[in-house]
Length: 185
Length: 153
Image 1 (cartoon, each protein chain N blue to C red):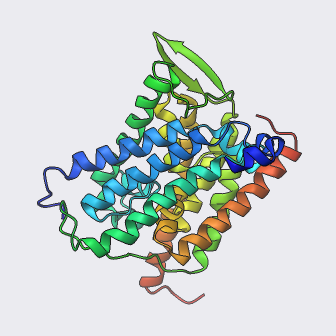
Image 2: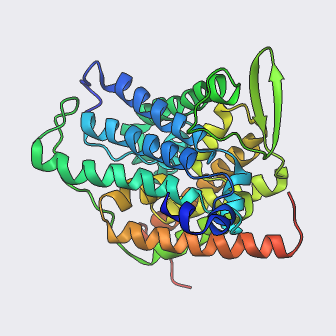
Image 3: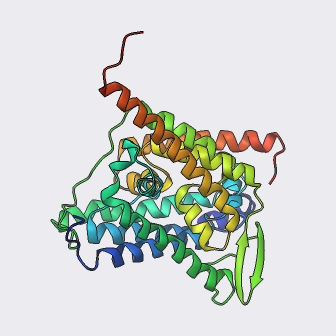
């Protein structure tokens, strides 16, 4: 990296865990979306799954528009869970290693019969309350980090770019306030 | 489309999800702490997850419609289906932003987090379903009251 040559201290403070695991992971996230798009012409987002799955158990009219896609959205979500589990079995468990992969220091690692699971330290109330707002916001705002952030920005959609800028700025502000209030983890 | 799907439709969706989820795990975006460290300016690496993904989709979404007419597994055209812009994009985006900043987790990353063994993330997933249901309930009621005439107050 050029920045590494010129200002190692700055690089170290901006990217304490390097950039390769982030960049490689991001390329794979994009590749997964592209595989689906190439085969089906669908730009898949992750948050529609919440409403499409609710159509199985609720008669509310809002959810019925997703009946046609609800089965494959479950398969997509199961694929995401399985893909992350493959990562956990390989890199997270230390079975496979690479110069491009930097292990982290966050959360807790537990070994269960050679399979290393990772658990967050973020408090349940933050996850639950945050989750409620994520559920409301992504569905009213027409997309989340994958629908707006990956597929929408990739197709240069102005709506998605405005959506990403909005949730990014508000999320930064919220996280900074939460930190300033001393809420941790 | 659901009547006669191509036999490879579901397998392809699964494989796409598999790569997508592996990437979320590998990048550590499935860990709320890493997202919070980014939002609190302690590690800017997450920019490369979103950037890297958008570069790949940008190239594919730009090239594929010029090279091919229809997707092999659905017969659908590759045309852009753009979401319309209105106030909801800003309101919803802001609500999502508060939730993301508080919890450090978004929908795709939450599914992946379950895959890396983080059962605690079920709190966030439960919350997301509650939130999605609440907005669906409100909007269904509002649509119903707009279409059926109500007595004047």
